[in-house]
Image (cartoon, rainbow, N blue to C red; front, side, top):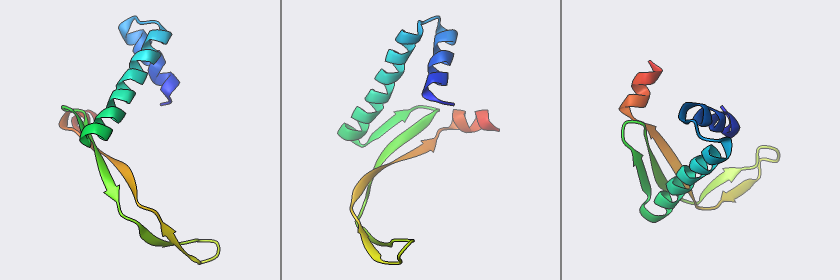
Length: 90
């Protein structure tokens, strides 16, 4: 499902215009990003939990040349499914 498909679904389910649904979806996504930056964790009870994780710098290899390369430290996001989401998939 693409963002546009999700916007269309939200508009149909709620009676919102597509423009309003786009703004609502953008607000949710921006809220998740802000929560991760500020607190490092966002929990949507029953659905999922987003967690910010720090990945340390490490050595890797360029697959084309085999040359050793340093991969810089970075922050990544981990997403864990909640109980309701897991149950909906089975």
